[in-house]
Image (cartoon, rainbow, N blue to C red; front, side, top):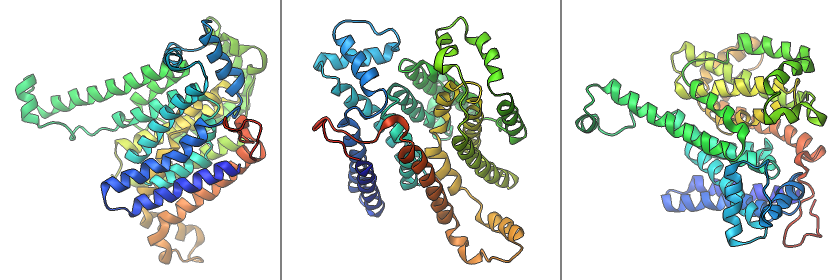
Length: 408
C-alpha cells in the first residue's frame, strides 16, 4: 500500500501547486504532472489485479498466437491487434489502457469538476483507481462514458452566432437552432456509448443517461420503497431475470458462482448517504428555483447508482453494472457541495440542535467542512475495501521492473 500512498501524495502536491499557479502554461504542466504518478503505478504493475495474468496477459498471448478470443468485444480486440503491431509483450496493453482510462477520467475532472482536488481524492479513496487495475475493459468503457458526460450538459447558448447559422441552414428561429445543437450533443454522447460498447458490452446501459437530464426521474418516493422491496425479495427475483437473459450470451451468469445475489451493505449505505445528501440540496435549490440541467442529471445518476447497487441483492452482476453510474460521484459530490445553500443548511442545523450549537461562525467554511467529512467517510471505505479486504487483489504491489519484490 505504501506505493499507492506515495502516489496520491505526490499527485496532490502537484494539484495544490496548480491551484497557486497564475500562468496557464504552468498550471497545465502541474495538472499533467499530477497524472504521472497514477500512470506510472498503473503501467509498471505486474500481477496486480485479479484478472491481470489469468485474463488479460493470457488472452493477449493467445491473440498473439492467432487464436480468436471470443469473449472479448470487437473494439478491445482491435485495440490488442494494434498493440500487436508494435510488440507481442502484453505490457503494452496496460500502457495503452492506462493512458485511455486516466486520460479520459482526469480530463473530465479537470474540465468539469467544481473541486479538482476533492475529485482526485474521491477517485483514489472511493476505490475507482484500484478497480481500474483489475476491471480493465470495463474501465476503458466507463472512462469513455464519463468523458461523454459533457455532451449531456452542453448549454445551447454556447453555440455559433445565430444569424450565421440561419443563413447557412435557413433556420428561422432560435428555438430551431437550439434543437439542432442539442441533437448534435446527444448524438455525440451516443457515439461515445457506441465506442464504449465495443470495449465492454455492458456499457449499453449508459444510454439511460440521455433521458436523465430533463426531469427528476429518480425520486426518493419510489427509489427508497422499491429498493427496500428488492432487498426483501433478494434472490427470488433471479427467476424473472432468467426469463430476460435465457436466450442471450449473458445466460452464463444464471449458473455457477455468478448466479447469486450479493448484498454489499457498505456500498448500499455509501450510495444512500450520497443520494440523500444530494437530494436534500436539490430540494432546497429547487424550492429557490436554482436548479439546472446538471443538477437534475447528476441527481438521477446517483439515484440510479443506488437503485442498481441494491439490485445486486438478486444478482451480483448488477454490482458491476452500477459502476457505470457510481463513478460519476467523482464529479457529482464536488458539484453538489459547490451549489449547497449554506444559509438554508445553517437554518436546518439550528432547528435540529435547537440553538445548542452555534453554526454562525462556521457558515463561511461550511463547504470546506462538508468536503472534509466526505474525505473522512471515504477513508473508512478505503480502509475496509482496499486495505482490510484487499478488493481486486491490488496489494501487495509488484512491478514489471522487479517482479519478485512485493511492496506492501
